[in-house]
Each structure stands twice: as C-alpha cells, then as structure tokens.
Image (tube, one colour):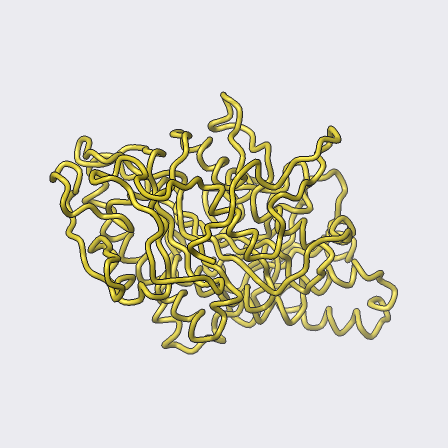
Amino acid sequence: MLNVLRTSSPSCSGSTRRSFLKLGALGLTSLTLPDLLRLRAESGATSDTAVILLWLDGGPSQFETYDPKPDAPVEYRGPYQTIRTNVTGVNLCETLPLHAQIADKFAVVRSLAHRESGHGSAVKNLNSGYPHPPGTNEGTFIYPGVGAIVAKAREQDRRSLPHYVCVPSAGIFKGDVGGGVYLGSAFDPFAANPSDGAGALIPPADLSLLRLQNRRALLSSLDRMRRDVDTSGMMEGMDAFTRQAFEMVTGRAAREALDLSREPAPIRNRYGATIERAQPWGQSCLLARRLVEAGVSFVGIGMGGWDDHGDALTQNLPRRARTYDMAVTALIEDLYARGLDRKVMVLAWGEFGRTPRINRGGRDHWPSSMSAMIAGGGMRMGQAVGSTNARGERPQDRPLHPNDVLATVYRHLGIDHTRAFVNPQGRPIPLLPNGEPIAELL
C-alpha cells in the first residue's frame, strides 16, 4: 500500500489488483491531501529522470562488498576471498558473486570519506548534504533529505503518483534519512510495502469516506465508490487538486504500479519471489522499478541491518549479502533490459564504512573510508572511481566526499545543486553546501 506517515519506524515494499494508496495524517493541523497538492503547485524542475536509493542502513563494510583488500594482512583482509568480475581490474568480495557477473553495468566509488562516526549524524549528513550540530546524532533532522528536495524541485510537475516514495515504509526516510523539514510536511515521503498485498484504503477526509473503518468494506466498495462519484457529478465539482488527490487514492496508475501480480513469474523469481516482512528486498526492488516506470522521481528502499560489530561479520553478513546480491543485480539487469538505464540512476550506500582492522571478530564504524555503488543514469559504468590505501584506511587516489555523490544525483535529475530554498527564518539554504558531480561518471 502507499501511505503518508507521520510516525517513525525503522524501515520502508506489491500487491494484487486491490493494492491501493493509504493516505494518513500529514502532520499539519488540518492539512488534507488536496491542500498538500496545492502546496506543491509552485515552479520547479520537470524531467523524466528518476533515482532509486538503496539505503544500506547501519553502514556496510567496504571490505566485504565493493573494496576488498586481498593483499592486506588477515586482520585487515577479513574472512572472505576476493573474486574477479567481468571488468578487468575491478574485483569484489566473494559475498557478491552475481554483482561480479554484471560489473560492466555499474560503477564503484571507493574513495569516499567524511567525519561523522555516529549513526544518526552520519545518516543525516549523507542524505541531506549537511553536517548536523553536536547533540543531534539521534535527534532532530533539521535539513530536508534528497527525496524531499526532489519533490520540492518538481512540485509543478503534477503526476498521478507522488514524486517521493519509500519502500517498504516511510519511517527511516522521513525521520532519519530525510523528510521535508523546513520545506514542510507536504514533501515527506509516501510509502509502499509489497508485503501488505491488498491493503486498506484511507482516503483524505474531504472525500467523505473517513468513517469507513472496515478494511474489507473499503476494499469491496472501492469500484462502486468510483462509479458513484463519477455519476453523481462530484468529480466535476472538485477542483483540480482534489481530483488529483482522488486519483492518487483510487486511480489506475497507482493500482497498476503497486500490483506486483502483473509481473511474470520469472521476473519475480529473479528478484527473489518470497515476500518476507522482515527483509522483502527483492520485491521492494521490483516495486521500485515499477514505481519509477510509472513516473515516481525518487524511490528510497530501506535495506537495514549492516551494523556488523563482533561476530555478525561472519554470522549474519553472508545471508544478508546473498539477498542483497540477488535483489540488486536483478534490478540493474531489469533496468537495462527495459531500456531504463538512462532514465534511472541507482545508488547503493550506507552512512559510513567499517574499520580496516578486525575488532572482536567484526568491524566498527569508520567514516574515513567507504564505498558506493552507482548504476545507470546514462553514465559511464564498468569502472572503479578512486581507491583506498593498501589497508583500506583512507582514500588514496581521487578523494571524494559524499556530497560529490549527491551532486551527481542532482545532476542526473536535472536539478541545480547550487539552487537554494528559503527556510522559515527567511534564510536561503543551498541544496548542497559543497560538492561537484563526479567527472569520471559523466
């Protein structure tokens, strides 16, 4: 289902023919969805490009994914082997064998570094472009996230689906990775969860259906409701924003985008057909592809659990990496097969890397070196940008900041990263305080 959420939960996933948009409270005292849409009716960028963010919450180890160090001492190298890919000179950890087969379809940025070692502060920094003041590691998110910025920049481009959606829930993307903040709750993310299947429908209050509390009654009466509205002339009486709100709830575009049963079984199986509420990454990636295909500008997928301290590096990472490997490579190959590789950019990263030296069998937080994977976007793939030193402690060639990655994201979306929005105090805040698109990818 698709949901506008005010509460925070730690994650973000189709559905059948009766999968719908669930619209909840928007967080302003009496703001309805039509009001939200009116707030989005100012000028902004329009484009057919899109981004899928794979947020690896917890901070994945660069050694055990995209930047292995086979020649380092064992206490740095770690417990896994290095494997070759189909791109000469680009090797990966053995935990990603499917990635190795399609390395020509993505690029790895290995020389990223920043200074935030706490989860909360690093999450905020990487997803807003701004460091947060001391004391806000687990506190308030004070700068809007990239998805909210995209929704704001494209607010004039009204569509039957919202610009910013997160999968499988809005919690981390709104509370931690970035809601609208000073831009307003109108730019918080919607959410879609493939695990919910045929979910309940909660339309805006001004459509006079708020009292219909029973899910079964709502689902069984939806088609009749649409016919009744059309024949009664209500649709004609609604203004443009209310009509758009109604279509977000009951329109064909939303229902079709959320309906994973429309996908052939081989495609669903390639992503990983089992939908598990705890880790529906494959179906989340499939749903993300359907959403960007239908016109959503920015989809964030919450892929948590990468905080591998202690023996988690050997006990938990292999199973998680298998799920990730299958889901992500299926998404990348699917985008290329459908000719969406120029339209859609995929970015996979977390808040920081992990310590070069193994500590109590695992790795701790390490912002001084980290990696990101980028695919599509019409950019130059099949390469590794930058490098770290022999033990993976710090960038060696082509040092980059996470804001350079964000600037690359904005460039793909046709959004000027030097543009500013005005906060409630009347101060213009640039989208990024620094950073430039990564030239090697362009």
